[in-house]
Amino acid sequence: MEETLDDTDIQLLKHLGADSKVTMKELAAKVNLSPSPVFERVKRLEANGYIKKYIALLDAEKLNFGLIVFCNIKLKQHDKSIGRSFVTDILRLDEVVECYNISGDYDFLLKVYARDMKHYQDFVFNKLGSVKSIGSTHSTFVMSENKNSYNINL
Image 1: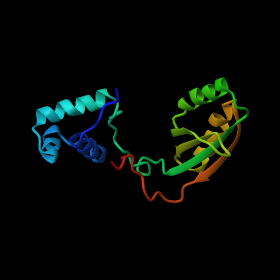
Image 2: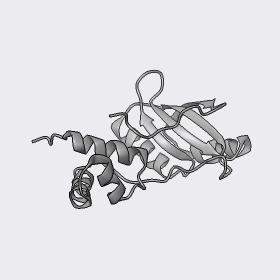
Image 3: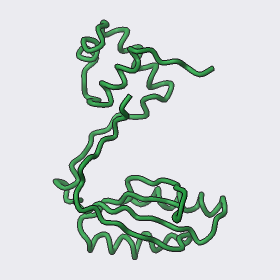
Image 4: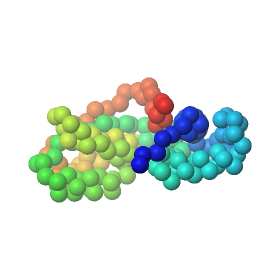
């Protein structure tokens, strides 16, 4: 049976999505409950998979990874084992921070962080180029990042 979230659960998810460092005491005040039931609700939301994990959103530019590239991938052929092999290979590449199986002209969309164009070139030739299942790639370079939010607007 699928769990139903009430308004308090939704509010908790909204607040945690906006700031995962908020304390249970602060969170409790925001939803007008005491910390103990809020703690139990958050633990239930975590256990049931509504909250996958807590992360710190790092500043890529300050960490010298200011080049963001969206790389479209076309596989050589469509086959379940080739697709699985591709995903396994991509999960090993540190520069790839997001990977999506997509429809349309390409099979996968990768979000890649690199220090600069030279770093990205090295990544394409020496890392991505070693993934045997890739038929072709198409790179789009981000000129400016105008919105970057992992929060879901509930």
